[in-house]
Image (cartoon, rainbow, N blue to C red; front, side, top):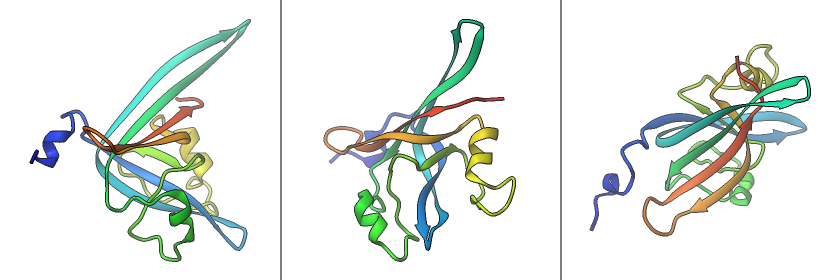
Length: 147
């Protein structure tokens, strides 16, 4: 049997913070999970439309198969989300270990994180790729701007 560490390329060595969004009584909260051994890629580009220039980037994050992963419906049904994570559009991924998001404190809101961190993105698409070599979960997103 192949060693689990040998199943993943050596460049799958990034730490990420994943924030799963959920609501309680109409209030938005974020559940943070820190994951290691991930692959994070960001591609920056500049687009010109007439006289307007916009900087954008796309990001891809691959997370190794993990016993803590649940599909979105299972995760949403949990009362205690502590040990588990999922991937859904609108969740947020950040390269590195990032403090919690707190929507009631200026500077700690999800919008602040996305605006001020060039390695943060809101997930737009996901895939579960657990068959074959390097089983993983994939998240794609667009970074609106960077400073």
